[in-house]
Length: 101
Image (cartoon, rainbow, N blue to C red; front, side):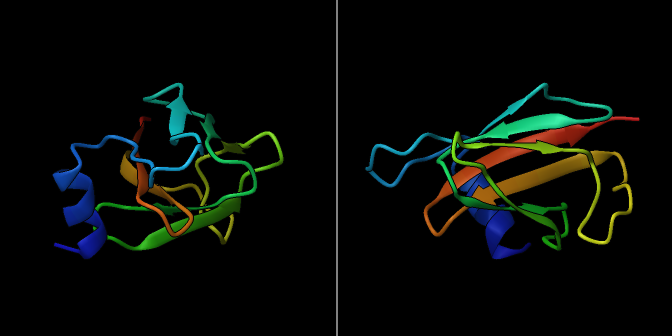
């Protein structure tokens, strides 16, 4: 199991803050079919990983701390339905999202 998945399981899929005032990661709607809004700390870099731990997409949240993920990877291909994990910045901000068909 990858280190990222182990960390997510240990934290019970909760978004965790590093003690600062930054917002936790949130995903709505969850599960989603076509697009999901990811919110969190403004200007944070978010990495989206599949269950095997492979990074599928990297995005930068805007100044309001928001990004709409259309279910595509960095190459523009639709990712398969399933469970994906999000990680923001260098802190332990984590979230889980489910893409359905």
